[in-house]
Length: 304
Image (cartoon, rainbow, N blue to C red; front, side):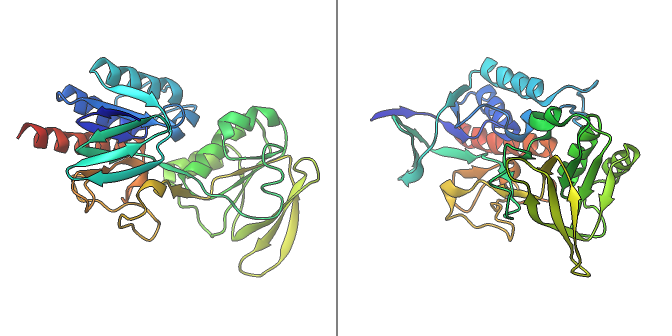
């Protein structure tokens, strides 16, 4: 198997990974970013990026992340589309295995992000792609002027409900608690768009034979069940951090990797950045900060 050596290897080409690649390459390191799909992760699903400092007027997430990638490459970073199968350590070097190549480096960063959590209710799996979706930008246009249900109560759910309200005037958001967890500005904007709310309720099943026809919901306080008709169900009920490559690392109660203020884990030379890391706020701006801090730490060590 071919072996390639680098100063710094980043796994994941989202904002954290690409920011880290830029800072590391600009600092004179030989750096590569390994990404199993296309760059961007969740950012690619954003239609209007309106809260990133200095980026105004708004742009879409795909344009934003492509600019980040070009910027990192301009400083000399390599971006490689490949699936990582394992991470090991031998002496001072980490060994990252893929199908055809072993990548070696004394420093690596896990920037693999997080993926959407499923509801795990009857009908969800069977009707995924037939009205059940986890990406409003991808599938929302298929349901123009249809009855749409959004499930969740955080920033993502409320933001997606806002977007879907531009496609249909009949959007209902269902949340298991009596208040939303999203930022007040996002909630206010969603309510102003005419999105209807159902609180204290959970989805018990997604109903339909060949496509979504409705949902069965249960009030968590009274136990009362009821049905709502729907043509689409968009699920935004939280994220699962992608830590399968580093299961041995300490994590918080949500499964996110614990690091110090330099983004380093208890394993020296192994960093974590972005949505995969334990922290109070998961936004593009904090992911970029994580990646830059980790890379700067590596640059300083290499040059010390």
